[in-house]
Each structure stands twice: as C-alpha cells, then as structure tokens.
Length: 218
Picture 1 (cartoon, rainbow, N blue to C red):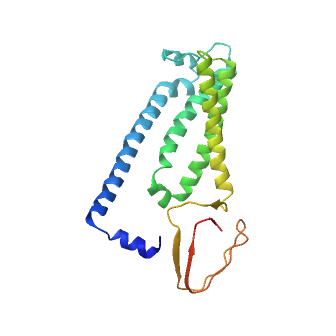
Picture 2 (cartoon, one colour):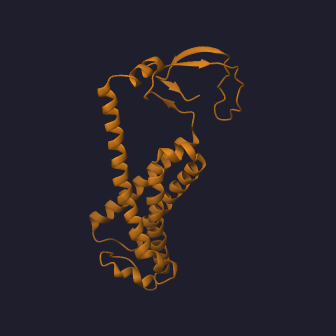
Picture 3 (cartoon, helix red, strand yellow):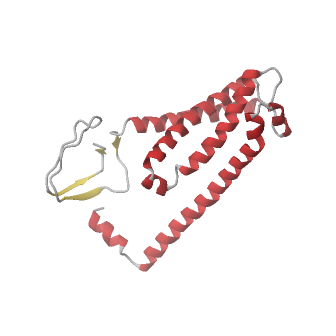
C-alpha cells in the first residue's frame, strides 16, 4: 500500500475509525490487566523473599509451604543460586512489562535499550540458575524436571534470537505492514556514517518509489 492509500484509510468511514479505537482500547486494557498481574507477582517476590534474602535469613524462605527446594542447610552454592534466581525474577518481570510501553520507546530510547540489555542478560542468568538447581537439587518428578529444563532452554533460545536481531540490524525480510511506498526528499542528503550497512547510498531531492517486499534493511 502507498502513503496515499494510508492517508485515505486514515480518513475513512466512521465505522473504520470506531473499530480502530475499539481495537486500541482493547489492547490498552489487555496490557493494563497483564501488567497488573505481573507487578503483583513482583510485589510478592520482594515482600516475601526480599528482606530475608538481603539480610541472609535464608531459612525464612521455607515459610512458603509450596516451595519444595528453598533453603537447604550447608548448600551454600545452591542457596545463593536460589537467591539470585528469585530476585532476578522480580527484575525480569518488572522490566519486561516496561519494554512493551510505546511511550517509553518513543521518549526514552536510551532507557529502553539498556533495559532490554538487562532483560536479555537476566534471562540467561535466571535460566542457568534454574537449570543448576533443577540438576543439583532435583525436582518433584520426571515431568517437572523435563518441563523446567525445556522452559529454561526455550528462554535462552528466545533471548539469543533477540540478541541476534539487535546485533545484525541489516537482515532480510519478506513481510511487514508496508509493502509499497513513496519517499519525498526536500533537501539534499548527506551520506551517513554507515558501519553496518556499507551498501547504503545517499539520495538527492525528488520523489522515489519502491517496495519493501523481499527487501533488506539497508
């Protein structure tokens, strides 16, 4: 679709505008509910585990009767792994919801990027500590053991995939919301410093049409 068609759709019928508002409202409502649930979990983690962990009172973990392998006397490495795992869960849960806020991406891109880096790092650390505890301390059964292992592996795979996209911005794509486009250039452009996309070239004033189908990000 072209920019002209986009403009035409933007000023389309009343039913289209109402549907768009309803869809946006539903998305905001979903996010608020999801974020509230995630942040309640963060409050629980910090309220129940925060003070005992930071003060070294690891025995207090066992007040959670649903926890099968919390504090184990003499298992210093395992206890530290659990402490890191549980506190990092609060960080990744809270930070992850912030990554979904478009206003933060638009107005605080530096924070968004550093929060994303912290998220990826935390995803690897929390998965590795989970795998360590699962192997060293065991689980309640074979099914739980396999499920926890698969969960940790999938988290690291997804984090690695995200990291790959970040480090390789000039990839190929065959899909997207916009296919055909027109670019209006009103001033002569200066070729930017381009370390990652060496094939990019500067263009002068004028109108240029193109398509993003089977295009690269160069």
